[in-house]
Image (cartoon, rainbow, N blue to C red; front, side, top):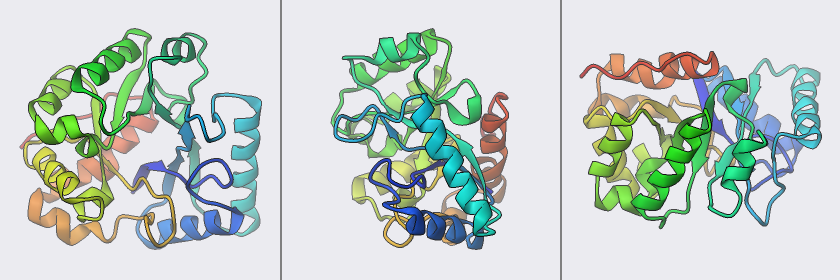
Length: 246
């Protein structure tokens, strides 16, 4: 399986704090059924490294791949970032192509403050698409606007934005509101992808094996395959995603 959203790069954000933790996360991914991970450090958050498309990003990414090879950990790691979209510099970042997309594709993993209004998020998503990217909305089920007004998710789906649900939300580990909204998105066929959004080997771990029972209660095996393998593969291959056929 393929994990499109994982904070596995060490030293660069609130995910893996060092090389040992990053390697532990990688090994846990493999044990839990994931053999391809897109490294998506937080990008454009004030109190963290920028993680923009730059020489420093590629140096950290290259060193991590070398570390995995040195420790004989056969996890395939691909480049990416989770862009925090705020109004001060979003247009500049997009115009200057300073964002790291998912494996060099048109797909851009994008997050917002959890209390951002639906109107503000929608405006930023339109801007991202206007600049030639395909927005992948990170964990929409965690945003208050989606929890309170699910129709917003329907609108984003119709407009062609990719909706990425977190594993932890489905398992009830990220709050009741997120769990309820994640179930809603899955039962209405609005989710395109599930990802771990892992930050830690134990508290917010990588891997998908723990999802099997929970997903079987919510959606079909065919939809689960689309969420965990088919659509992630299409995204990292820069191909169109396949909408669910419920």
